[in-house]
Image 1 (cartoon, rainbow, N blue to C red):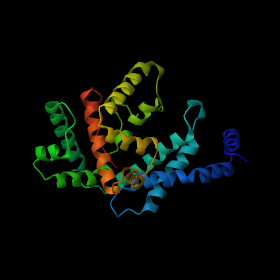
Image 2 (cartoon, rainbow, N blue to C red; image 1 turned 90 degrees about the vertical axis):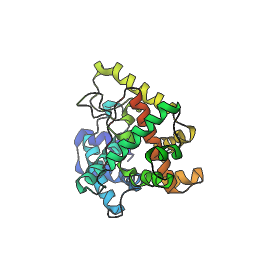
Image 3 (cartoon, rainbow, N blue to C red; image 1 turned 180 degrees about the vertical axis):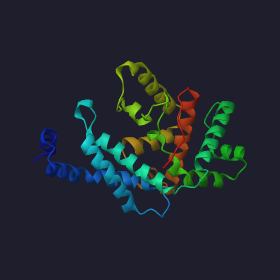
Image 4 (cartoon, helix red, strand yellow; image 1 turned 135 degrees about the vertical axis):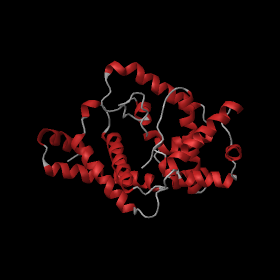
Length: 257
């Protein structure tokens, strides 16, 4: 039986056996998301633990998927899986205290330099502004990378806003009221413009990660760099994007698992 037929029957009957078939069919999605989020997570969390957390999200996705929203199940499921893993990591509280504060500082320094230079600053320029060696700055990008929810971070255009940058780029999201269409379109425009201001290499890293869904090891292979350097470039790209979005009046919240 094709998966499309399983969905049709499941929607009609909610048969537990069909539910199990769907969960097993889409289980590889969980490992894909866990592999992408696993980079930068401290070694105290085993990869299989991440997969276990993600399975909770997949089960929720199967139970709550609504095809009338015109969103592919895979897209909906990845958001649920990622959210379940992030929620579990938050509860474990494994990330260094002060990481979010450090990321805000990096974003503020970057924005100040951008305003003064009229372009995105280099690693050396940011490190000099911070008063630290460039190696220490790059180490900070690596260690705090797990704190960057990046395009999954809520934009909070309104106090109760839970939609993400990724939702807006895709023009989708749960609970979007038609009356808010103009506001949503403006948010998409602002994010797209912010991405266009990024250097070409930064845009390439984001495209490989989000559009091609490559892991950091795969991105490193494509660019001829180490996975560690790929993580640093990704984190730097996100900081630049968030600063550009904030400059355009789109407020994002620095957060992390």
